[in-house]
Image (cartoon, rainbow, N blue to C red; front, side, top):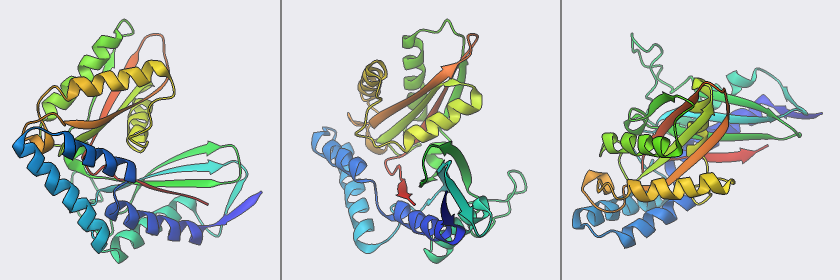
Length: 280
């Protein structure tokens, strides 16, 4: 049994909150630079020039990439041979988020109640997804989620008779309906299978996957590639100004499901789809 202290978790989450807000994942940065080179629309080129300049300036100056520093989504893969010592795990994660957003001078965007809407002033609580895994390590991924893109996400409960083409058409229709709202070029996370809530978690986890990594199953890897190409033929373009770069990646994660259903969730990520990880 390996022991990990709550204070170490607090410090790690605090660091990851700031890192995710300031530094774009390198794989995404490369794809945005490739989009900058390949874009043909003058307005789209200008938008991508600004996007690339912005994330480089943010990294250089230690400033957030976007003013919407998001609601903190934290994925915790907890090794079954890990013992969390010195406090409560979820409290430690939330304390790390509090310190990260307060000490890092990040925008606090969380309200304590969905209808009464009073700001918590420290961006807590986080949305925490805990998964028990083999081993004696704790992997933490902080994925701050801005709501310009989150609001454009969608879900559909397909009948099991739905064909692959139906799923692909639906994903593309969600991106098309979103238009410029999620700040394209977007990353499209898709969760397919499981139950309603499982599909939603799959889609969110898909956004935290590197954009240069395809699904391990060639069937879904080809589907990701095909859907991306179709999305980029929509002509929405960077920031909705028209062009060939509406999305830089489509990440599809799947899970077994019931014989009577086929849940599908599309979770939209903006051009600043951020995440940072650490292994303790």
